Length: 303
Ligand code: HMG
Ligand code: MG
Image 1 (cartoon, rainbow, N blue to C red):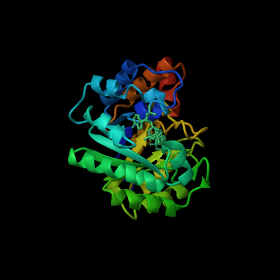
Image 2 (image 1 turned 90 degrees about the horizontal axis):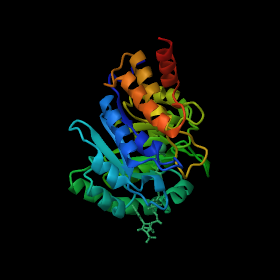
Image 3 (image 1 turned 120 degrees about the vertical axis):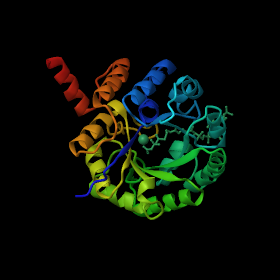
């Protein structure tokens, strides 16, 4: 099997990870989490989202968090921007990349961003144009590429359709997201193949939630196709307020351990990453949702 020789991870913990937490996490804690992630070697971090605070109260401190992080020149800081209002607020905080987020299923599009797929593209169009004009990179998240909490199975054709629309408005790269973590390897590969009808392999990333415990297998299945960009969440944090029952993303610790075992260097210090996951888990009052973090923390106690 020819896996990619390099893999790049975007840690989405500060955004996807924390957006679903009921208790407000102070901005200072979010900032420290970002700092710990970059200390561990992450080169891409999804910091926050510029969405309505009525819809996602946890992200209301977006500008405060962006202003307080000590940036490194070699780290890319991304934020979610669903519309021009969000983009204009985000622009003030100088993100390196903005993320428009659409869905392969109509019902999820309505529940998550309050509009149809077609309407979402019209909202994204000026965002993409303004971002590119300002020299900011643009990524497109594609939710529900395998299954939808409201519609059930999602056909690969729906993914190809959305990828084509995003390509048509200038989105530079896309995430194939299994929002509710129902995917299994072949299904996820079919969703990726659909995205590959419009984007090349360097521009497609995997974003797998781990609800059914398949996210690591799905990561490997995506790597079989040559995908080398993935989103993961430190301590397995995450979930979407509009996808009830879905748990967090595949944990960054588990992906890094897998990569190390395959002899692939993602440039991440696993011990420091485990510390970052423990830091945020301690704050949230629970254990990291990562088998690797649990094993390594137990091992530390034994020595
Ligand atoms: P809307 O109600 O249709 O927006 O919401 P609107 O344009 O009609 O405006 C209504 C009100 O919202 C107005 O305020 C606007 O100012 C305000 P009011 O006059 O009532 O006081 N508003 C905003 N405020 C702040 N920032 C903005 C903004 N836009 C409007 N950008 C909207 C549309 C998209 C804003 C709303 O549906 C929303 O915020 N949704 C949040 C969705 C979200 O954040 N979901 C989680 C992230 S996606 C995810 O997790 C999936 C992903 O991880 C991949 C995967 O796993 O699948 C990416
Ligand atoms: Mg997600």
